[in-house]
Each structure stands twice: as structure tokens, then as C-alpha cells.
Length: 85
Image (tube, rainbow, N blue to C red; front, side, top):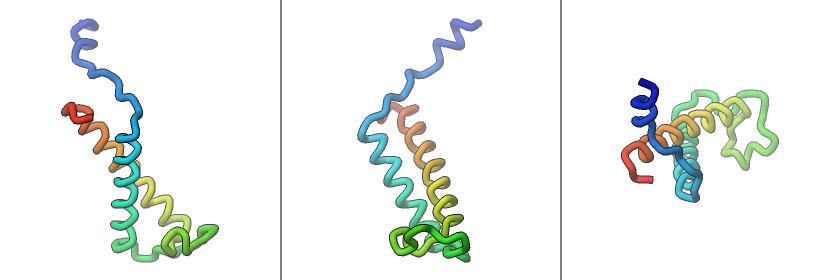
């Protein structure tokens, strides 16, 4: 049974610039989504340079980038599963 289970496991995904670009784009989309949907984007504690981070406070930065990484990982794994990357 173990050999048949191992036969269906896909090859591991290697990092490439395409994977990095997909993750960057996913984070940009998540930050843009957060910019329009977060009710209090500048909540305390403040970011070290709020203007650099679009006026976001630390909680909003962490929330949007965490969402961006989840979104990016899903896109990358989905594209790898269908054989596009």
C-alpha cells in the first residue's frame, strides 16, 4: 500500500524566479485588497515608516502580508499541481 501511495505524490516544487514573482504579485493584490477593506488601517502600534507602508499600522501590515502569503501559496501549489510551473 505504501508504494501505491508514494506513486501518487507529485514531484516537489523547486523555487524559481516565477515562484517569487507569483508570491510578490499575490502580496500586492492582498495589500490592495486590505487598503480598501480594513476599517482601521492605521491602528497602533504604528509601523516604523508608515508612509512607506501606505499608512498601515503594524497589525494591518501583518494581516495583509499573511493573507498574501496564503493566497500566493495556494496559487503556486495550484499551478504546480496542474503542471503550469
